[in-house]
Length: 272
Image (cartoon, rainbow, N blue to C red; front, side, top):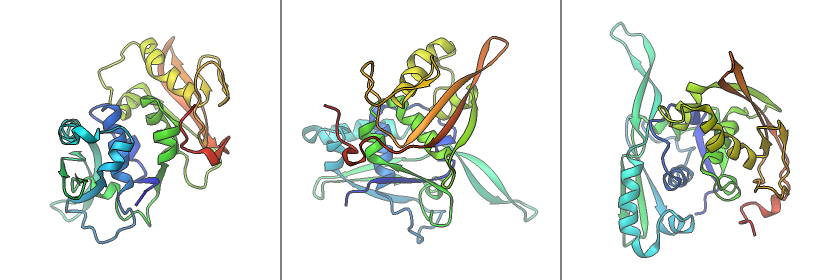
C-alpha cells in the first residue's frame, strides 16, 4: 500500500506538545498516521493499537538507512517515545456525570522491527487512539504527504502548515485565527525556548513562513518562482502578522484560504 494522506482528529495539531522532536520523528509520525485505517470502527478506545509500516517507506523518506535499519530504529524509538500530547478523554465521575479530562500521554510508546517481513510495528497508546481512528463521523484534518514530506522541506514550515491546514475547516473559504506566544510555544513543543522574540522570528517564523509563501517582514506573498529563497508549492494561501502590545510581540495572527497549486501534476517532485 502507498498511503497519501495522514488523517487526524481536529485539534491534534493544536494539542500541547512536550518536545519539538526531530525531522526524523516528524516524518515517522506522519508515516505512522498515514498507515492507519482512519475509518476503522472495530477499535476499542480503551485498547492500544498497532500500525505496520514497510521498512522501504522509512528508507525512502530518509528516516533510516537500509544497512543500519536496526540501529536507526532503536535510536528513532528513543526519540519517538519522548513525544507526549495533552489529549481529551471522557470520564464518568462519582456522581454519574460524564466530563472531559485532559491527559498527557505518550503517543507512540513502542516500536518493533520485523526482519523477516521487513516491517516496523508502531504501538499507539490507548489514550491517543481516538485521535486517529473512527474518524468517519468526526471533523478531521487530512494532510497530503506529498505536500508535507516532499514539497515542504523545512522542519518548522511543516509544523506551521499542519496547524494552518487543521484550522481551515472543511467547507471554509477562509479562516482567521490567533495564537498567543504561549500557545505557539505549546503547539510547537518549544516551551522554555526562544524567549527572545527576535530569535523566534529569525530561526522559526520568518524562514518557515517564507517557504509557505509569505514574507513576514514586508507583509506580502512571495511566488513559488522566487529566486531569493525556495518557496514550496502548497495548496494554501497563508498570511501572518505579529500581534504587538506595549511594543512587545504577544502573538501571531493567521489568515488561511485554499490555493490552487502551481503545478499539481508535479506534486511531490523534488526541486531540481
